[in-house]
Length: 565
Image (cartoon, rainbow, N blue to C red):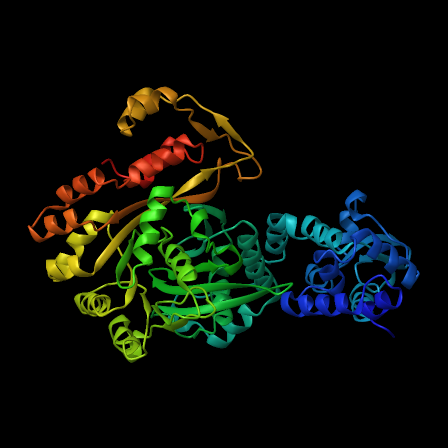
């Protein structure tokens, strides 16, 4: 039987050239041919639907205008609906009517017949409508699904002795593969992806067991499964991460790769830590599709962006990005590397861990256990004819020394450091044992950053703030007079928090000659900061206030993410 592409060419609805282009897009993105044709503007979605209906002699349906009975949805498992991109719409006696974008998919029809026990009648629908229906009827109610999974457990079903030595590993493995446990873990992971979670915390306590999500920098408890399930759930996560489930006394690190369909993948970085009452698992979600590599969209004010770009476009020297864990340092570095990534440049990175794969850049994963640390990787890089080097973090004098030597010998070096603000970075390097003259000779710029939560756009309202609060934030009288402060009231879109997403605030200190002179003369951090501000540096607090005045964030967030100048 002729394929869809061939049939469309035969009917003169598309040309052979258009078919070849759409097939290339399909291979690249993983979507169906019909979706590629619509995406590329070669065929209207309505015309494609009309053609499929006529060609395969099946009725068409507008799923957006159709309300499906929940009992009908239950007749087809979620994984099958997602795999084949089909939605059950109606049950008529021994027949089940299913909507699909590709009526020629006989494998899907056979699967549905086998799993449901019904005869299958096909109606055709637009691919986008099918995807929306799956989202609405299956994935839109994960919380209810979690409850449903929890009801599948018999209270007496799983029992583990608290004496770790008495646990049978084979029993543990069997329990971890138990259908309800597998379902529960899968749902936790899927729910986290849908909610835009950055970290999942699975925590064991003496008499409780809980799961928390970190959303926009804040932790929220989402469920408390029975403590009896603790070992089974944690073992399931360890099996998925290819970790040793028998090892319960030492920390372990692993990775889970989840395929979401349509060519999209999600990576989970898994860390297991033994605690007093069992193991704690933290999963970091690494979603490449959400990685923001456009520097202009990160949150830089224009003057700060100009200073940062000036620093990274120098032919040599060192640019440091500082801030606490989870402040977006890696994203800033990746965006800088993305801008610098040209065929004329040899770029090498030493990371622990490698969070995202960047095409055209040589990324090296650190392995301390075999002696591959930042210092040894840096030494190797210098023998690889590099132009630009990125070091995940400068943790000790040895790494700092090699990085500075590299910066002094014609290489551009990018790295991170854990300090409170940009001027204190200099003090931190001095404390590590780096000589002042080496710092002045190598350092181009220092960027300090924080992430503050954005006000939800759906429930943003004006709010009156006590003038004293604004004075305490060090706002100027002019700013206080004209300020229109906003906050989020809380709605369905932001899970009643009032915040949705985050925006970065930056402090960029360019190493001007005046600062270098002061550093050589032994100036304090406070003196360096004062001079940097005089030379035009915008502090973290000033940047955060600017975001608040633009209606992006709240006064509470300004006080939370930045210290007084």
